[in-house]
Image (tube, rainbow, N blue to C red; front, side):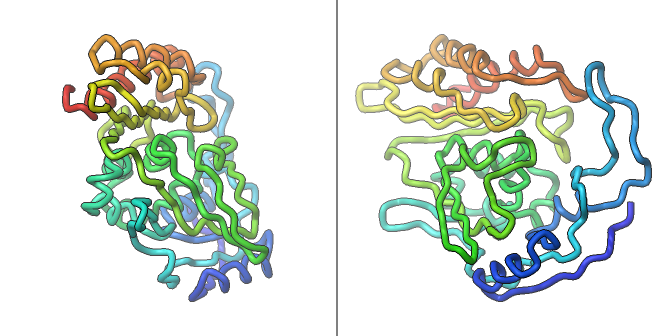
Length: 311
């Protein structure tokens, strides 16, 4: 598939990038690692094909479904402030939007304090993709099964959005509003992903189920965060699920069920069943809705057990 012609602009600051987006408006798009957008703007060589499963609509071979390819790409690669991982005085962890997935997976800080995010990154694409792909790009792709998006939702992250009109912060669970759709305005740039400090004894885990071990989109993925108090009772829990709805789903009923209970196989299995009741998957060529519901139960239980090293 051939790429259409486009120009690349290389700003040196976030403000300069915002000015470029405002100037060229609908003609421009943001270029980070390029692992998504350079695929999405390719011209299809076949206009369409038959449905891939019973009940699926016919689909175009255009990878990203973009109605019109941008004529200008504003590259973020020369903006130092968008790169890197830092920990604040209050324990919050900030990741620049242009930080690569490989840098996240290799970070001792992330591996120790945001384990689910590192585990989600481990399963993203291939080493080549992880070396190019960025956390900002993965989140902005807004895929319901995005490998770093689901753990970020479970970990209660916020995203910083910047434009020529100012800066705003949005909870990540409100950022994605549909498959491939976000609250990001055309002239805005996602600049940071911010993870507030978790309870001192909280840990997290993420598991991805796919039809093969690498270079695959999840059939279901799940991430959980759990903390147990001095009395051995669960006093903090968050669960997020991907590929089982049009947006990442926070299993609030399952998390509420866990609070105040002692961790056990029975409790975790019950939480998984409750979470399964909170999802709303579809049937497609990767798996049936019924299969996805059952796998939510299994994956939620396994993430909870992994956190306490009982898996």
